[in-house]
Image 1 (spheres, rainbow, N blue to C red):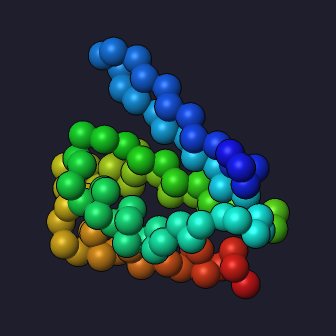
Image 2 (image 1 turned 135 degrees about the horizontal axis):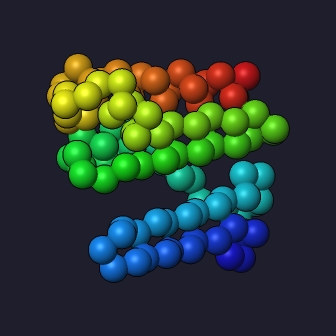
Length: 101
């Protein structure tokens, strides 16, 4: 909050939990957020019953990653499948590189 961002959690019994996090990209006191491609790869590979939406906006460019869309395409294939997991990491890396250019 001191850097212009926020953390918000919404939870409803029997429906799920949503976590919203906003970081102000260019604030001098913002801590590094780490490697998001690896973080999302790990989260999605171990969570077949959880959907993740990762939205990254920088300088009016946006990258969106949504596991619900991927599951719709894959059907019964687990996101923890090593080939799918590696693809997820690469897809996020490419998307983030594109908005950084």
